[in-house]
Length: 380
Ligand SMILES: *Cc1c(COP(=O)(O)O)cnc(C)c1O
Image 1 (cartoon, rainbow, N blue to C red):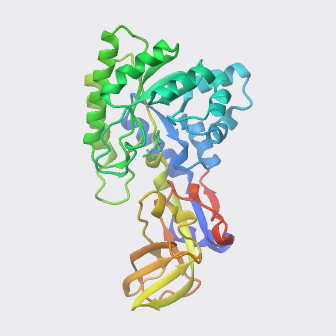
Image 2 (cartoon, rainbow, N blue to C red; image 1 turned 60 degrees about the vertical axis):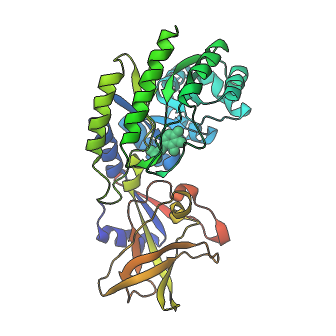
């Protein structure tokens, strides 16, 4: 845990805005994931936070990776660039899934030499993969319930149970190796039933495919969605893990390899933003603080991730409900309209915002000439 004093010292040394990543916390989250789900290999979903130092720490901890673009693939690949061609090939084979169901032809051609796992969920994609990356091992992405997730994904991706068998055999007939099944229950899923239903659906499909004579499916990818402990309403991860383990042991044969694609769970709690108050006004009777970081930058999750972040002040005193604005001239740059903060904070005072490691700075822009926050790595 980084203390308030450490945050202040870092801000004194480096200025603001800062985005501080704690690698002890990252290693700890990875260990919690592994220890609670012993049958599951974690493929970190790089899109949650593509910082190359995060990728490196997880690589060293033994993680595998879910990538969804060539840039993300290369970000991970950098860690194995000193290996021989043969070792690189083997490592990618064992440790990377390209989990974007829709891939450009150029991307497929670049990936083909490594034969990574890749997902698909529609007929068009089968023919594209056959033509441009015929040696891939494909994984069918299923459409499963995303009920109660903070970020819904099931309207964009996934094949229904009915479509699944048809697509699997269409891929086999096109000469592809169908390695298994995947799903995503929606990001920050606090409704654990989604996982249970999805595992049950996958188990049925495994059985049906085998009965129809195809026996090469040996992989189940239970996706991402594992909730970060943003507040007390999120039930402990150990509770979810216990339920998942029970269903996996009950329904999924031992010779099926099980992987997951945690993003948010591994990185959300690893980062803290430190910003500075640069302006203060009262508008329509409401106290407004203007800070030097905003929704075009570290707080982009307010827009893209449907996430609400909270602030801690470094001073105490009587509080009131305030609005916190980002620094740009755009009216969209509102971080929170209901933040309880001390009412006598002054220009130059600092605010911190924890649990901001996932889907945050990754979508930062240079809008209005304001650069992204400076990234500081601690306990690396
Ligand atoms: C975004 C994404 C993830 C990570 O999801 P989290 O909710 O952050 O765990 C995993 N798999 C796929 C295919 C994704 O698109």
